[in-house]
Image 1 (cartoon, rainbow, N blue to C red):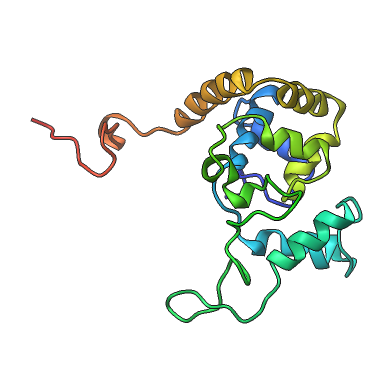
Image 2: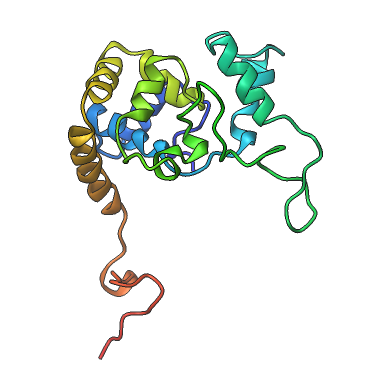
Length: 194
């Protein structure tokens, strides 16, 4: 698992890890745009909110209004999961929308709000509103920041095309074929060898 970028990784580390698997900076920036859907557990965000890099303080780069909103979302009020265990998502699942927070990787807003899989992730990074430190770090390098600006100013067409190509490339990494594995058309069914 050492080859997988960490949520708290800096831009150099993230680019190095993706490059070690053959990905360009453009491909890396487009793949991270996949964070524009799905949910991110508060456990991955908490260090930025309360103990950034061991300082005991929040990440100073987070805008104060954004910090207050995500701190509220991720506050622990004793909520539990269906099995009675503490919820890994904090007090609320990251599925609601606060005023001024229409995008969050963890809020799935690209799907639930009816908008398309597109530039919202990059628009948020331009405003300093990336949930993960590794995401916001895309603005820390001139080259990756330029790609973020390009994707943010596009209607999503370029991003989606780049993302699709990079995902196909990623899907071919370490694919086991022949006697070592199977390529399935339906992941839940074994391929009949007859």
